[in-house]
Image (cartoon, rainbow, N blue to C red; front, side, top):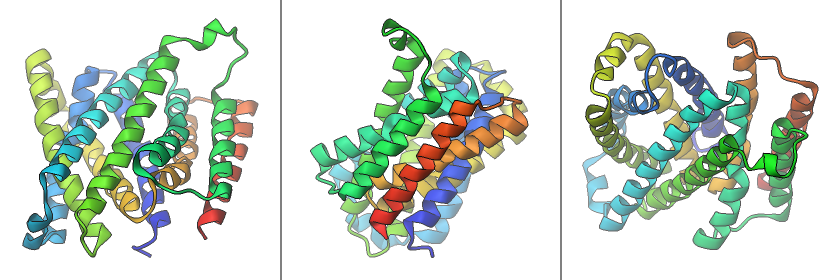
Length: 295
């Protein structure tokens, strides 16, 4: 069960939907930068505990400069993408904001083939296309051509690109360790990346919005919840990437949108429309095709 990318991806999708909803709540009282910092700062203790139980000293012998470069770039890209995502929620609803960046599945597939030579079955590619059509159905509006070039749409696409590159680099870094256990490789990659991201985000907030550090501390319960769910989600993503191609994992991970819509319905009183439910149906069909190709 623990060697199945499906298990880890489902954990990641559920935890990411919950964490993102909590970040949306926190972002009502603090800036985008501080809401992003919380994800890493309050998640770091949980990552360290996870790493203490999982890692062995022999792992250090596998580390190379190339590994750290990939982790550095992936970490900075994820910070950038997270800030864009949190900002996107201030422009659009939680459900629509969560949907926009899901175009990353196609971007991940294309970049994976072009840059990392990750092969894909034709039925999996078809599933990704169907899943993307479902996403477009959820998001699309009857607007003019110029209307598509909106600020929120551009922000969503840039965030999707950054998240896609992050996923591919994380997978490449984990596999580059050449450890017998993908769970251990993913855990060590995650630990290195979160330590880096915590330092970067703490420096940004201390420089730009130092007064908000006290606000974040006062909301330690919500912040700790965000940190915990972020770490659980990252453990799921990183381990799934070490077990399966990033494009396949990302496609299955679109189940997060279903979780996001349920959260939007029950906690934010946002009611999905008929076309959004139609889009969900297409997404589920696309995910089923991807799973069929894998199994």
